[in-house]
Length: 466
Image (cartoon, rainbow, N blue to C red; front, side):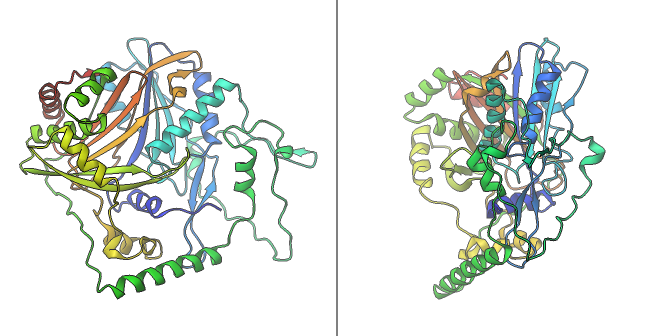
């Protein structure tokens, strides 16, 4: 049984209202209309892929929450009225509601026709399920399966009786809390794990080894609790030997009534972006951080120093998970892409520390509100700069449709209390184009647009609307 990590549980708490609510979203566009059957085929693959899971609580104190397979899904969400260009992001901003990583589906696939004859598609998921790279991996896997002609969800057989795949359920069926599994007598031997030979149809995304791993006997809650408590007790003892741990550095949410969330999405020619970065002695990533910081100053941020939080991808192989850590740098107005490059290189070698020097696993055994209080705002800085990297080539083709505009970002459904973070930037590259998604938590849309235009002009960058 796969267990939640500390990062997973942090995002689970934000889903429960403790912290800034976050949903991840992938967007892509085609110049022509997509067939409903094609979109449904993608939906069906996502339903039985790695996003098809939910959180279940452990029954033993100290054991971590775990992931359980969940094929319940929001129906494919398609609106009939074509959207104008300026309505795409306002529509996409609404898609983070009703995502529930515990008792219902944590993801949604949506699409809308465009007035220019094209189609925009959005895959939105709770951050508890995956980070940006994990979300991209999920959709890339579904599109790869589509291209390979894998068009059936897995069907398991027991003897000669086949179990049909679960149907896509209506929204009214989605939120019924799942029933607990039947009690198994200790004397009963568990059934053997399914193997590739017992699968009667191709397994989209799940190879035989992965499939057997999911269904094989896993460590019990008791075993996991023993491991957790050993780690926590040992780590706490070592921390106390070094003295009383200092409280973690936290930030205070800004109660200003003038703050609101607004988004823009831009594209840049990759050759021009890379040349601009090289000319300034920086890298594409340091140019990105420099640009986001200068946009915040152009918005009217009064402080002379900006602190930036930088997510670091820690995965060693593609998978749907929250596999990331956080680091930070500080910048002033004299910084350039070259100096930011050096600061970022140093920062990537360290990580933001666990709460008060204690083992981070302590956050998984405390009650949620205590854990939230202990880590509240610890990763928040003035700006967030998330460089998602180069997107898989699989995202460029959906069936027979070519996609030349793809982007990834975060949205904040149901935001009521604003964090320290005032501007978030998400940079991704597909082929010869960079996509920059900006989410402002400090100004109106017109101010954000104007500040971005000025910062791009000063930095020698030409932005185009996504």
